[in-house]
Length: 123
Image (tube, rainbow, N blue to C red):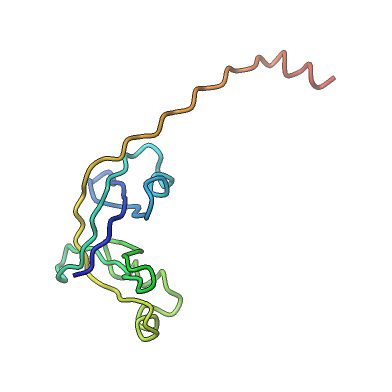
């Protein structure tokens, strides 16, 4: 059974979205949403399953989406061509959410410069 550890966020309905191989990459989609550790595991094809591409070279899942067609559109010629080339497999997956990744410390806001001071540079 194939398994990968990834990171993701949850949308407004609580569904896992924005999967990435690093928490900061996942956070780039929406900095306001928390990031979760996620385990993506090969599963049975059920109506509510997610789909993902198993990359043979990396030995991990990528392109994790709630519909098979969304993974298919990541490939110019579809996944079957890539499967025939031995690049990987399109598989149904189960998502198990883990711990939240703490938010990084927010940078201190720089003091604002009054407009009058900025006009002095125009001279």
